[in-house]
Image (cartoon, rainbow, N blue to C red; front, side):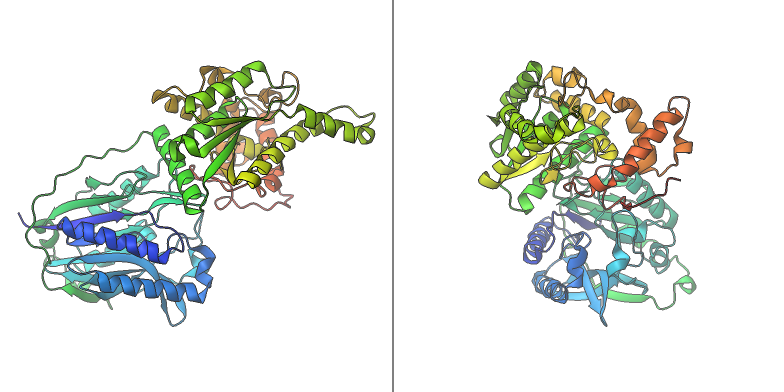
Length: 568
């Protein structure tokens, strides 16, 4: 049976590494050609990396991106390639995709629908394209679209299908959050079935600051079924054969009077370039279960942040608690044990059990553990401030001094030995401000900044399934900061299984406190938590970047004013 062989090259691009990104595309184009691929598809903005943000305001960056694209295009021969880049016409910028064949750019498509919500700011930089176009390749007519273009029924997919396209090559830089793969599949499947078309969905993979791109590219047939799926969180070349009759049988069936006016028909090649192919062995790639998916996202986000920014080793303050334990485990799994250093900074309030658990964790992970007691330094602080604090009872001030001593020690080690300090605060704590500025918030990257506390426990249990590294006592004991005698998190916060549902509703779903109150969530606790969230915005603004894994993370997703008297 004759077929068209489509390759989705989900590659890990680095923002600003124009030559490196193009070299990787050339590598994958050659790999695809060796596999008999007719059309290889690369992700959105693959030349520049994504998101390039205000690099797009630099004219030389735009020129260099175009020069890199043209160099790459001249080198691609014997295969058709779809490449994401930034185009410029008459002084305007466009999020663009070009179709390349035999060393020449045959046509350029401009993204039509520009997202401007959540982490997206495309209207800040780009103009919308409005020219319908389809491409002819042998007997095949296909359309090209970019990310958001396929998410809405009013996008260009319908127009391309009316013009005879039976295959849509949709390129993406769609960042990860939990459950998003199912949303994508529903969208792509609905477009495929609505128009009787096959859709190739190619997504970027890799970490970029707070964002993680999960790959999970797919090809969906005209009945809405996934007929090929790429790996999650890894570079991959997905190769799928699509029967020729599936792609060409509709082309004479459409009413040409319905073709949108101004539609451009661009010939890529008169015949397919590689007519003889040996069959492709279909791979079975499943979807990860939710906790495993989050764990892989955190691994990739940390690995790429460290690697792409040129850091060598990382340091983590180990307390014997679950947050620092899961961060250490993720760091070892992402980077290797030789690149992770734990620092145990015991005080007069640190229990023997916590010290034992921190040491046991370090031993099981095989990492170096530095022990730096802080009690002498703490006593010096108290002595220095004694005359100023005379007559005043101890309060949170003395607790924060301990946290800041620890932060100072970690940053001193960072300066002296070039260690990237990983903070260990979770989303529940960051939401309500249960963290100390310049103390436990001090560091360069916040691995679990967007991970609710209840999910931290699930991640710890999941990690222990592949080898017991986090001590069972660490998971079982009640959370505590150990900054005063017999302290527990529950002294200050509601239990986490109460707190996290309130935070999800208030922070991620933007629900009013009145809407959150229920039989299980009383008004007093809901109003107290929402007030703590509002008052803590100034702290979050001063926290290091961290990996987004929920639908709405602090920072780019949720942008609230610090000075704000609105309380609903």
